Image 1 (cartoon, rainbow, N blue to C red):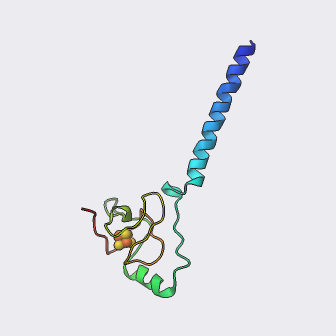
Image 2: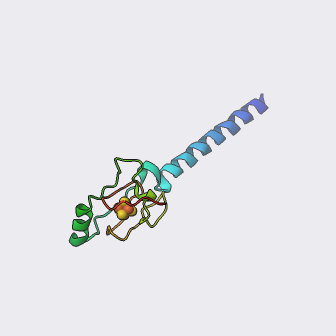
Image 3: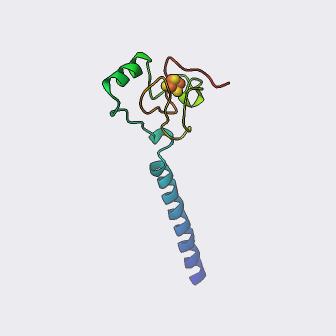
Length: 102
Ligand code: SF4
């Protein structure tokens, strides 16, 4: 009987730990759908350039994401940068200057 209770507690603790790890992954790393790239600090000239190049944080075409652009500097899980578009660049974003990686 005592062993059965211990097993239950053990399994419960493992389940709770797994849930905590999953929550940390979602909140802590900033990757995936939770990632936002705040461009509010970009000056007006930079905002005009972003707008002129039709930059968006969400590419409507999965084949034309910033993470797949030769001009993108960064990783697929964090905000990066690129030369033509001032400010933070979302890896899932795109713009009219998209150039596919070879
Ligand atoms: S040039 Fe455009 S598509 Fe390429 S990384 Fe910069 S914003 Fe994204």
